[in-house]
Length: 130
Image (cartoon, rainbow, N blue to C red; front, side, top):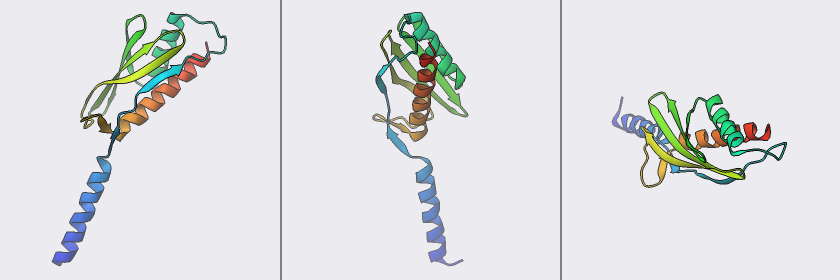
């Protein structure tokens, strides 16, 4: 194999590695509305819907106090934790911590944002059933 072919293979390998290590700005969810079918629900109802929504996706969901939940997701060698603050009208999902997700300066592995968006959708699906 000539030198030029080796350089091209090396460059292609580097590009593939960099594509697999993409990071994005952390996506936080702010003031997501609590939308229910009944229109009448308690803080406990909202808490239970959040717990169900996260648990269905494999998040370990821990209510800490009224209005505050910590959810943690373990995927292979990666860990992501979020704080979920809520009341009867809205909820927020914000980054808390992570392991092995290349967090730095407000950026994180791009998979994290997908996990948070799916968590939001799952919570919304549970809330609408109240």
